[in-house]
Image 1 (tube, helix red, strand yellow):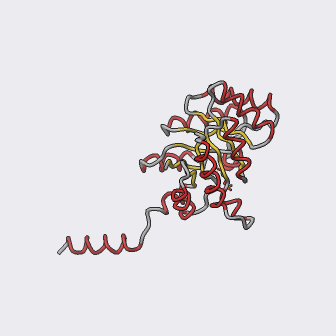
Image 2: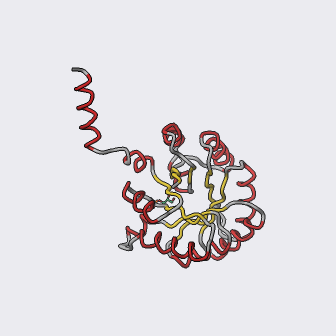
Image 3: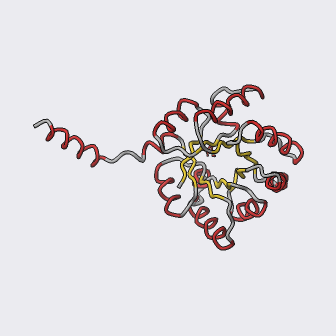
Length: 215
Ligand code: G3P
């Protein structure tokens, strides 16, 4: 399973990269705004800075909601760096844009996916990644994990190569459950990745080893 970090915060991206387990980064307009990154030039420079820190894929989201606008923005983003994956929303114009990008060899991440039908459309259009938002489904009392399981089954039935990128992850159990169900990638806040480290028996055992070593 690949680990992506879901942030535009450079310090957190660097911390995850230094841990040695990072495979990529996902961003969205909300995460960029959270870091105070505004204006086209600053946003472009920020994507470049992220690509300088990590070796893997970096999702950069289009803001347009019409086909022509998405194509223009996506082509500009893809030209920035070979690591850039164009993030496109799951709307009708987005599906057309994903098909266009797929034909041009530009990789895409279909975002804001909340149903198996949407995931099927994204794969048929040739998306490189599909992003089911599991935390936001849980927020409205729908089991996000069932969606991961349904998409895995459908993609395996037909051999779709679109990678399932479990998104809107809120805690370490979302990562574990996504891994058990066969999601290809989990994109997580740094806190969820580092929480995987913790176990009280590890702390207790280490304290005992160190105490015994000092004897
Ligand atoms: O990758 C999508 C993610 O950023 C959404 O997460 O926590 O805003 O639902 P959240």
